[in-house]
Length: 168
Image (cartoon, rainbow, N blue to C red; front, side, top):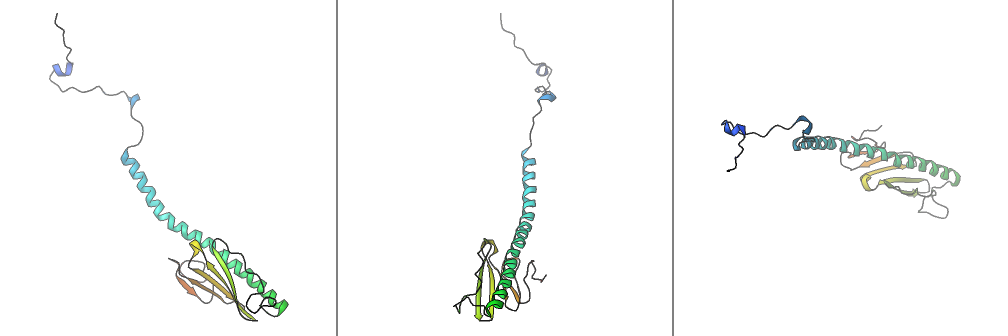
């Protein structure tokens, strides 16, 4: 006996053969590559807009660290001067009478006495705050010199705390 070959019905009728459709319960799950690429592009665009704004926000939040320390230090210097009638430390003609505040992660501090009744207190930016410098003297004159990108400004009458260089 010769074996009988089974021929699909579609071929015997002359129509192209097609695999049977999968049942709906076996549908593939997941995202296509295009959908994932679009999502990544949207996230990248949002991050590109949000990061500079966040960076400025963080910088603005660190400025009060300098200005508050200078203001408190100035009050202590004035109290020292009232008590001793000199801004110099006892027995010195080059050091301020009140100890220099401890440097923070964002600012270092320095006192420069120029006579027994005059001084200048300075906060200088460190790390991400490099380019920021604030000063105050014995008369309460405040100055700002900012060279940081997006903030560049100078003021001889206030401490600049916002981008754009305007006094508060």
